Amino acid sequence: MTRIVYVNGSFLPENEATVSIFDRGFLFADGVYEVTSVLDGKLIDFASHATRLARSLTELDMRSPIEMDDLLAVHRELVRANDIEEGLVYLQITRGAASDRDFAYPSEDTPPTIVLFTQNKPGLADSPMAKVGIKVISIEDQRWGRRDIKTVQLLYPSMGKMMAKAAGCDDAWMVENGAVTEGTSNNAYIVKNGKIITRQLSNNILHGITRAAVLRFAKEAQMEVEERAFTVLEVQDADEAFFTSASAFVMPVVEIDGVVIGSGAPGSVSLRLREIYLEESLKTAI
Image (cartoon, rainbow, N blue to C red):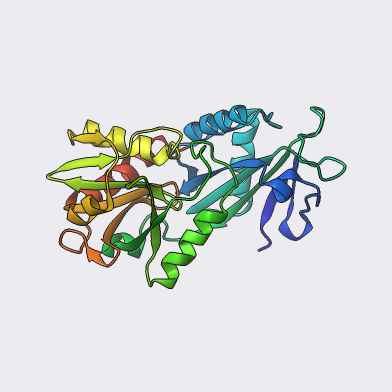
């Protein structure tokens, strides 16, 4: 089946979708994005993703080309048209295409570009990796300073993924001033003596939607949470570790820089949090 995508107000086959070569997302990474998971054909935590999208646009002085109610309708239609039971909906908004390349923003009447597409991911909720855990390496965090804005500037995270792959691992956790900031596409956590530890919110990390939900569920389950920075040595000395993201939910981490974390197997806290997150998120999926 040909995948149906959405470009600037139209649903069309992916092989008919086009964007201008002068689009600022292409030329300057001048754009923002969101990824919403789909489970049982329903959108997970859509309202929170929409809220963060609006914040990202505001922080970049970029206007939205679509109302949020209409955006929900587009998501639902793409899920329906592409018969997605488990998967993802990717959304990207850029500042649009001026008549030529110029570092200065185009005039305010330049329409933003909006693109959405789906990715079919059968077995997303029952990932084999969650049963065995993943291995990560640590790398220097060389990204720009406004990581709280979910921009399409993803070159360095992509490089980090490739560094991890070259080292025979699954992902990289980035380190700045001696402390872990986050993973290449996820928020990072350790567990020590039953306490969940994760970096506090700031401009240094993405304000993860899954992060917020998982921490809320953890507190509701009477788990202790501490929001502070932690070092790679603390990760290596932790009882367990994990990360959260919209596409992986809660993913156990069992090794960093060749050092086994805890027992070397997914820990009880991360496994329980994954279970709670999937159960509770499905209750409010739309």
